[in-house]
Image (cartoon, rainbow over all chains, first blue to last red):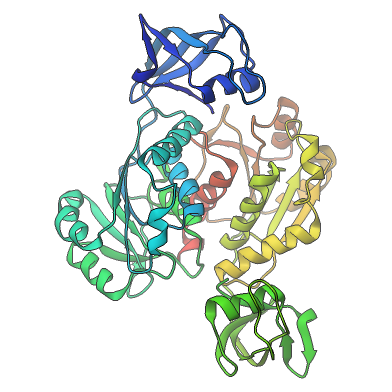
Length: 250
Length: 250
């Protein structure tokens, strides 16, 4: 946790914010702060700066929080890091990959994510406890805390492929370059894009023929990613870095 | 497992290779091959092609292998994918990050890896069961199997920082660009290098002042990676993709 992100829901009024249990544990055990210490904080979906820490009456014991510390006297003046100008549409990966992949996308600055069904996505993946809006949000929040960002990504679940690609995609794609990761009849994925994009990443085993036809009909171009087959959790940082190297380190 | 990699140690003579238990389980449960089927195989540190599968007398039950299948009649004619022209020197990460990071580097084509001590590496990390040459080799092998590569990376453990940087590094660095990931007094990390490089990645919390001085004295240049702080398992694919985008997708 490299940034304490304060949600308006944590406000106690008069500029004082209650810390969440996770934040309290981090401050007590890792930062080891005392009352009066100035900590780096950000407002959720807002600016970044500093706040003053007030410890709880009793410090946590192990993982058990014994009272709520607060942050007060906030001074938030800095903009969060720039987002990546990309929309990622990803076939729902297997649950153990999903968490890390979402966290990475959030940490890298992706702000618009669609998790979509595809013929080769196992139906059981949609029943995973990770695929719950509140779990997804907490994973995305961890990505922001890691990367010192405050702007919460939007992640939508798309259990039906066809209506999305036929009805929603054209609007999402407007003014953006559409890239379909698909190894056949494709050119190499571009490097250093100077325009916003929509990137569609398939499941293990790839998109099927019907799906590819639908993506291409909607205006996506197929791009290949080279000879090496990488896991989705590796492909995501590789592609984001390839498409927007300056967005990650400018 | 996207490639069955046959080690000379698996040879039974006369061009027949015994499958490892992991390979047998994959062939029986995932590929679901029968005797006579042609499978994609590679020779460890050699070429890639096909071989003919001979099933064991009894198929595995669950995770329990009941006999050894074999591969025979190999025809290996294709070169493995090109390696990345980079040497990675990484402060030993925490064990849960180490495995995935090594696997990713192997899958992405890194062939020379040094895991080095640094002031901010916890001494206990060196005692982890993951930091054993045979475990490291099996993790690197999984990376090769993922990426359909056969060339085993070399990974060396460097428990003492100073003799490495003073005595070994100059030779390793010869003819290569040395990049030290360090956020202060640094320029942005380059994109699309056209020369081989040595990349040094610090621990959580970074290199200390003494270490930075030593790296710079050895001829490394410090580069920063932007505002966002990413976990080491994310930074590795981000940087490899940034430095050698064409090496990953040409």
